Amino acid sequence: AQKVTQAQTEISVVEKEDVTLDCVYETRDTTYYLFWYKQPPSGELVFLIRRNSFDEQNEISGRYSWNFQKSTSSFNFTITASQVVDSAVYFCALRPLSWGKFQFGAGTQVVVTP
Amino acid sequence: DGGITQSPKYLFRKEGQNVTLSCEQNLNHDAMYWYRQDPGQGLRLIYYSQIVNDFQKGDIAEGYSVSREKKESFPLTVTSAQKNPTAFYLCASSIGPGLAANEQFFGPGTRLTVL
Image (cartoon, rainbow over all chains, first blue to last red; front, side, top):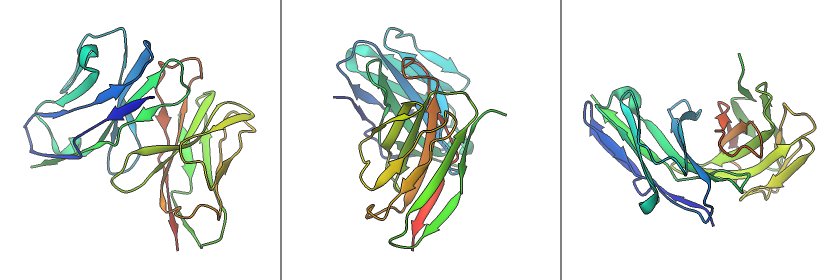
């Protein structure tokens, strides 16, 4: 069975604070891909990053960074020095190689106040 | 510009009516997907299609139907059998069924309200 858990329903921070979003996944596949998406108030999901199961290097892109730890089945996302424009719902997703489908987590609402 | 278009943006339906939501992509993607999102909840897969003239049920297919006659089009019909259709509907596409690495691209969504 494939499963993605985002335990944090909502996180509220003040601008310039760092925020970390947790993502824990379950799959029996040895080859799989993990994704993060951002859903701003407009509704359209925006792709942020993809990581495959063989690449455990952490990645940084501007104020965003991702920590992939296969040993704990986690793929956490950190926004450094948050801004109001970061307010959105963030989804973690899993796609095993053997599957045609994506499994999404329930999402985490991030609220950044000035 | 390449992308996914969904129409209409807002749709109102009377109880007992069938409605069809449009999804068109010009990305030359093989795979297309329909998701339903309820307030404060994640995405639930309704149907997906990995190739033209083929589609599979997702997790919540009851009360919905789809067709995939053309590569670029994947319309979703919400039938009267769907008891609680008020939701936000998102269409997505990705390059191909054998390329699991490729991300999904999403359309802007259609907000359906049953009156």
